Length: 77
Image (tube, rainbow, N blue to C red; front, top):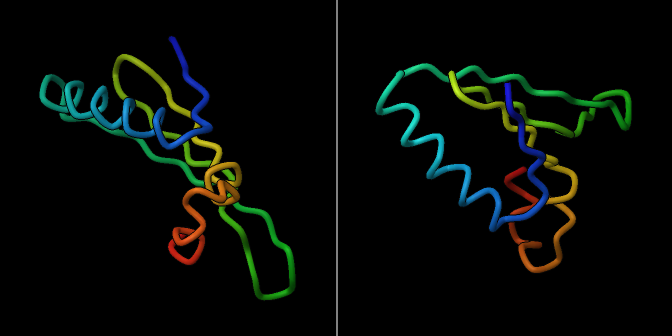
């Protein structure tokens, strides 16, 4: 199965369109989240893995979070 490593907001937008098309056909989406602990009661989302019937997507949320162009999104992620 093919996979794509996503590290930019442009890529994120593109895969959202791909996933939307795939969901129209198959209506199946798998989600896996990877975290790491930075302090005793704090964790940071590091990877988001999305899989359709056609393709796997690995989203580097740390890279997106640190993108200064979208610094306002840090609070959301």
